[in-house]
Image 1 (cartoon, rainbow, N blue to C red):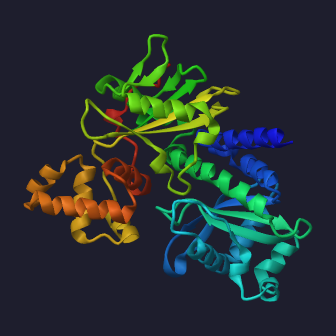
Image 2: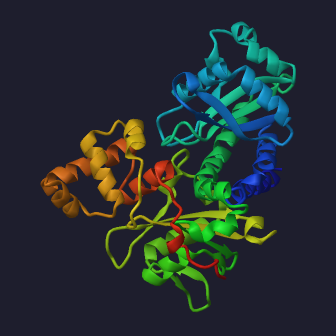
Image 3: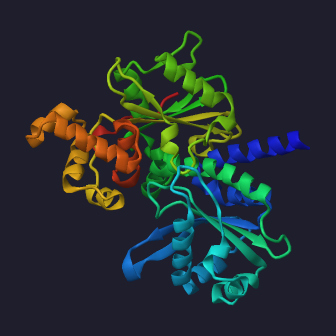
Length: 399
C-alpha cells in the first residue's frame, strides 16, 4: 500500500510540473491534488489593486467547481475573503517552507466562524473546513493557495496536511517557472509561438537528455557561453562538474525537486561562465507532457535558464516597497540589473567600493537572496518584462 501511495504521489508531482509548460492543465491538476490529500477542492488565488480597490481573483481552481459559482462567491464576499487571506498570510511562517493554516484562525470560536455569511454560503455546497497558505514569500500577492474539506470528511488529518505541504512546494515551483510563459500566452495564441521573444532560455530534453526543443535565447546561451554543451553521446550537460552533478541530481528523481518551499528560486543551479561570477540561473522541472510544445505523453525535463548578466528594466519602486529598500539600495539594484559590477557601480555613483559592497549586502539580506544571481532572478520574476524587442527575436526554436 505504501509503495502504491508513493507511486500515486510521484504521479501527482509530475502532473503538477506539467503545468509549468501548459497552464490550461491547472484545473484538473488541482482536482487530482485535492483528491490525493482528502480534500474536495483547491484554489490558487491572486490579490490585485490596493486600498479600497483591492480584490481577490481565482485564476485556477479544481475542475469540479462551477466557474459561475466561483465568480458569484468572489463578487459577494470579496472583502471578507481579502481579510481571510490577510489572516492566513500573517500566520504563515517567515521561513522558506510552506505551511497550510487552518480556518480556526479566522474567528474566535467555531460558532462564530459558522455564523459568518461566507461560511454559510460555502456550507450550501458541502464545504465546511478551509486551509490557506502562501506559495510565494517573495511576492505575497500572487500564488495564494486554499484547500477545502467537506463536513463529512471532517477537519483535515495531520498526515493529510503533511502530504499537502509537501505537494505545495512543487506547486510553488511550477507557478514560479511558468510565469514568463504565462505572460507569453497573454500576447500570443500559444506559448510556443512566442518562445523566441523570451529573454529566458527554454529547453526541453527527453529522458535520455537529448534536446527535443529549445528557443532562440537558449541557443544564444549555448553559442556564447561554455556552460551548456553536448556530451559525446549527444546528451545536454553542464560543463562545470559541480553544476553537472546538481543537474543530474534533479533529473534523477522527482522527489529531489521542491525542497525550498515558497522560495523555489533557491533551488536554481548557478552556472559559471569561464570561471567568472555566477551568471546563468538554471532551473529544472520534470514533465510528462508538453502538448504546448508539440510533445504529448513524453518523459523528460524542462530547463529554464536566465542570463542574469544581460540588462533588465526593473520596476524598482515596486521592489523597494515590497522589501523596504532605501533609495540608495534601489539605485544600486537598478545598476545591478543593468549588468554592472560593484566596481562599475561605485564609479557610476561616485561612491567607494566599500560603500557599494555594504549596500549590495543589505540588498541580499532584505530579499533573502544568497548572491546577485538569486537577486536578479527574484527581481525579474516580480517586475521585469522578459520579452525582447522585435529586432532581437530570433527564428523559431530548434531541435
